[in-house]
Length: 92
Image (cartoon, rainbow, N blue to C red; front, side):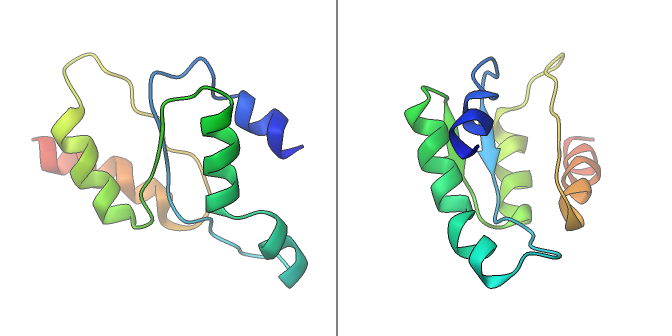
């Protein structure tokens, strides 16, 4: 399942993973699915991927790279939605 999920990013120009927000995960799930494993599988699938654990660091990294007409998609649980708002505020 992890390998298939990692391959789903193959058409993206760039992927950035933060730490995984584990809302309801048990200890076994936290061991088998984590950002490090997801990063490795995604990189092995040939995706241009970066692991940046903290959301505020993702905002900073994106603010240096995003150009007009770029599309940035944020997905996930927890506070990841704040990346979009903080990025727009930083770019204005």
